[in-house]
Image 1 (tube, rainbow, N blue to C red):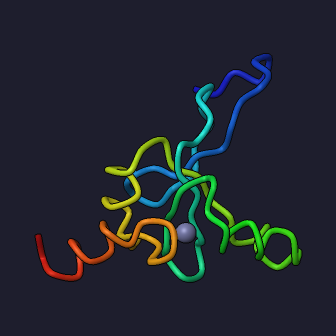
Image 2 (tube, protein in one colour):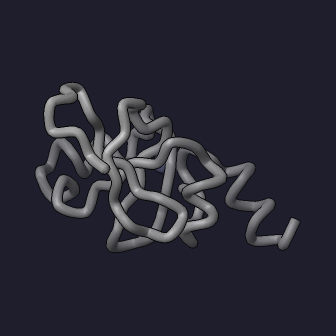
Length: 90
Ligand SMILES: [Zn+2]
């Protein structure tokens, strides 16, 4: 299924939690260990990436619906509104 000739492919995580190759870059980042997803601009994520501790747990999602389907929670730092909605069962 995967075409090794294609370049600029990104590894994304699907709704079932499995990795797949996509020509589209992820719109949301996630942490496989803590099961949190957030914006690509998240300051907390950037800090962990800078510290070098995040890369091995880093995953990417094509969209928010996929992250939620994969049972990830929104980041309280960069998506506080979504975190509150989901915590409230909305
Ligand atoms: Zn965040």
